Length: 366
Image (spheres, rainbow, N blue to C red):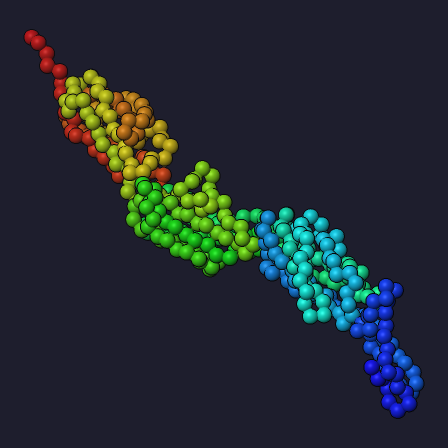
């Protein structure tokens, strides 16, 4: 190849290495004013793109793309996991890089797998690859990969329980400590058979409100997904909807109802009788209270008196036995006072009266 002009001409230049291999293409050769200049085309440029996703969960993977190029021929293009360092150890594991040829170099796929929560960068060490001119790469560092192993969750406001508000609005707030909430689903079912009454999917707002309309036992289920791919954990003991957080809400606006039972509607002066009152609720009475004579009233004072109250006992409701004693001839009803019994939703009983009880003087024989 002729190089130069006029009398500064070389007809051919060939460069070989110690193995007699022609490596002329790895050099730039010029001649000027009688001076032959041979310059090695030796710079190696390495760059890294990625990760393919910013967040991964435990055992999930992300990929970096590393590209190394040079105008010179590569003498060592093998990159292994040992050619990298990490800014934080133990966050991810590093797979064996795979290599494909590209123009003037090679492209490497570097896969990382999540282990524990944290963040780390990868750095390709200086001197990991080289070209025939003896030059090697400079150090290059990636963007961070983040690992989130904690499942997202959700809370309910008000919290699960009994309520005497109809309709009842329940505010659902999803949350995640690491990568953040991606989206969530909300189901509302009735407790009787878990038939789905409402189905809301792929919600992204910071909060979501469901309205529970009408007396019923409702199950509110929320499934939350975070950016890393973690899914919320199912409530303990609940297998109806896997990975859903359950809230059990009872809408109850009906107060307990109390009903009297009398063994007789007549009683002699000086005799006693046991009247029974049973208080029932659609869903559940609170821890039933111990009632006293002050929780009852004789509507016509002086006709009979309350001498004893026992209970409660469970008998298709909460049962109390009220013992009365006839005092004088006449009649009166027996009343359980208002607000003596409450259900779990906070409803209190109205007063309830027994049938009229007649007190008579005992007959005498002459």
